Amino acid sequence: MSYQLGIRQNLTPFLQQLLQVFFVGLTIGLQRTVIPALAESEFGVAKGSMLAVFAFVVSFGVVKGTMNFVSGRLAERVGRRRVLIWGWLFALPIPFVILFASNWWWIVGASMLLGINQGFAWSMTVTAKMDIVRADQRGLATGINEFAGYGGVALAGVVTGYLASLFEPRLSLFAFGLVIAIAALLAAVTAFTETLPHARAEAARHKAGVQTGPVPRFVDAPEHPSTAEVFALVSWKNRTFMALAQAGSVEKFVDALMWALLPVFLVSKGASLIEIGWITGIYGFVWGGSQLWTGPLSDRVGRKWPTVVGFLICSAGVFAFPALTAPLERSFAAAVIGVGMALLYPTLMAAMGDIAPPNWRGSALGVYRFWRDLGYAIGAVAMGVLADASGLLEAGFWFTGLAMALSALWLTLGMEETHPGHAAGVSGGPPAR
Image (cartoon, rainbow, N blue to C red; front, top):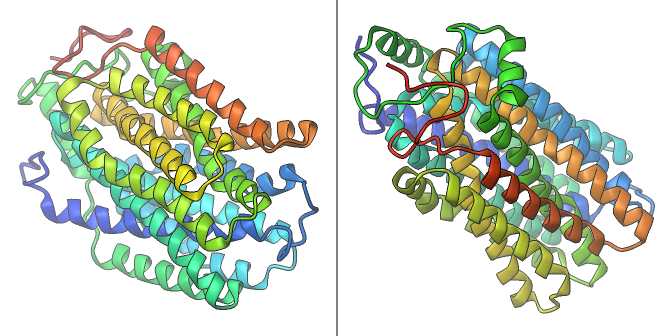
C-alpha cells in the first residue's frame, strides 16, 4: 500500500477525525458556561474565592498537559485509534460525577477525567491529521480540525446555558454529557481509521529520498530519539521549538480566562446565564470559524507573522474587555479575541508539524501540547492569586493581556519561519534530503 498524503486522497479518515474532534469539543464545552457561573450557588465555593474557582481549570490543565505527552509516545507504539478509544472510556464517568457532586472538589475530579479525555482524544485527532496531509496542507488541516473542535465547544456552551436555565442544571448537564460520550465512543470503535502506517511510510520515503512536494526543514536529531531527548529538544534545546512551546503555554492563559474568570466576572456585573453563554459562545464560534481561513493563510504566507499578529490582537481584546459594559460591546471584544486565537492557534501546531520528523512527530506534538495545556494551570493560578490579593477580577484580564504581548515579542525574536515554502532555515537543522 502506497499510503499517499493529501486531504482528497484520505477524505474518509479526515472526516472521521473531524467528527471525533467535534465530540471532544462538545465534551469540554459541557463545563464552560454553567459550572463556573454556579460555583457558589450550586457547589458551595466561598464567595469571592477565585483560587477555588480556578482549581478545576488548574487540575484540567495539569492532567491534560501530562496526558498529551503520554499519548504522543503511546500513539507511536500502539496506534492512534487505540489511544482515542481509551480517551473516551475516561469520559464516560464525567456526567455522573457532575450529577452527584456534593461539593466543588467533585468538579475538580471531573476536570481531571476531562483532562485525560482531552489529552488522549483531541491529541489523536491532531496527530492523525498530520499523518495523512501534505506539508503544504498542514495549516488548512489544523484550521479545519480546530474549527470543528472549538465549534463544538461554543455550541455546547450556548446549549448548556439554555438547558440549565430551562431545566434542572445538573440533570441537563448529565443528559447532554452522557449522550455525547456514548456516541463518541461508538464512533471511535466503529469508524476511525488507523493512520500510524501513513507516518511510517512518510518517514521511509524521506529516508530513501523519494518524498515529493516542498522540502521540509526538519530539526537535526536522532532518527528515533528517546522520550527524554524529544522533551529536551522541544522544550529548550531548539530555539524555534522553545519559542513555539512558550507561545502555546501563554495562549492558554486566554482560554483559562474565558473559561473560568469571564463567567464569574459577568455574574458579578449582573449578567444572566444565557447572556454569558452567548458571549463565551461568540468567542468560541469566531475562534472556530475563523480558523477555516487562518489555517490556509499560514500555508500561503508562512507561520511566523500570523502567529505574532494573533497574539497582539488577543492582547488588545483582553485589555479592553473589563472596561466594556454593554452586552454588544462585550460580544464584540469576545469576537476580537476569537480572531486573534484563530490566527495563532492552528498556526502554532502547523509550525510544530513542519519541523518535527514523521518518525517522532506524535511525540513532538505531545511535548508541545504538554507545555501548551500546562498554560491552563499556570495562567489560572496566576489569575486566581492576583484576583484574591487585589480584590479585583479585572487584574486577571490585565495580567493575561500583558503576557500575550510579551509572548508576541518572544516569537518575533526567537522563532524562525518553519513553512517549507518560506523558511530560510530553522535553528538546529538543515533541510531534509
